[in-house]
Length: 111
Ligand SMILES: [Cu+2]
Image 1 (cartoon, rainbow, N blue to C red):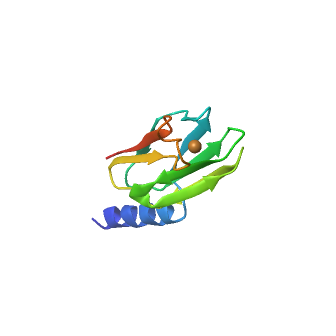
Image 2 (cartoon, helix red, strand yellow):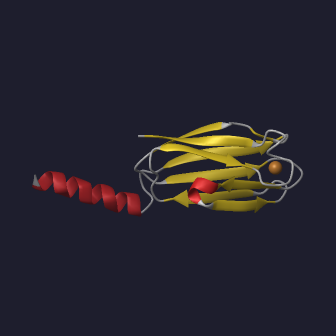
């Protein structure tokens, strides 16, 4: 029992330090999110790396996590989410007309 508590404590500390987390890459190219479905694991920290590979500005909007960012041409941003609950988190580009043109995707968090 004591070992189990110790294990959970270490896991918690590692998660707090950013260790054991995963990386999800979201690329914007040709008015699309290149991987329209991105996977992540629940219960650990996730680094979302968003890269605008187009020669013009895009936005990254993920309402479920209240993430909203403007990305200039060829700009790269990272968002660290300490912990995610399982579920589907749709994201889109809020630049006028872009979501209608197909700029949307979903972050799928597996339990
Ligand atoms: Cu866009």
